[in-house]
Image: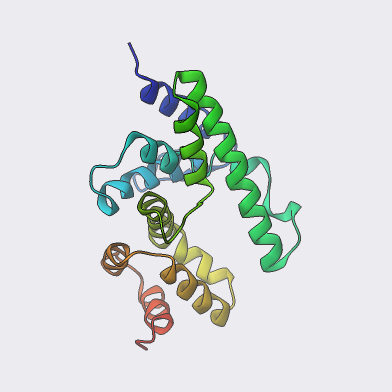
Length: 196
């Protein structure tokens, strides 16, 4: 018999698997983009947080839940549009995850706690929310940073790295600095951190 945690995790991953976009993994196989992102988030959690709770594991796994359904370009360009889109996505992912949890038998307060973590409520004060943010930053740096930096103007990219760095914990900083990076990516990080 599956537990409420296993049931919810399977339901989250089933929604991730509906992402029509695919990504190629290191072994050459393909996977729905959102499912690959979610698995990467879960892998990093073991490195940034000792003995994570079930609730934190679910929040980390569901952080981008069904994000493909509302594309970024449906919002205004610029920082305000981006932040509004991201906030709305977090709210929607949190509400959907909370519903899946309650259907699996979790208490309302547990479902609300996970929704709050996904919405990053308490970032900077709440250790579990910080762990989720650390995972997101590390997934970005490890998997998306190099491609992203080729599409964004250099000065803007330096500011993005600086903002990302400020959101991370000291433990996540150590992990980030140990990531393998191309010479150009490493140089960009060094410049952003004032080590150029």
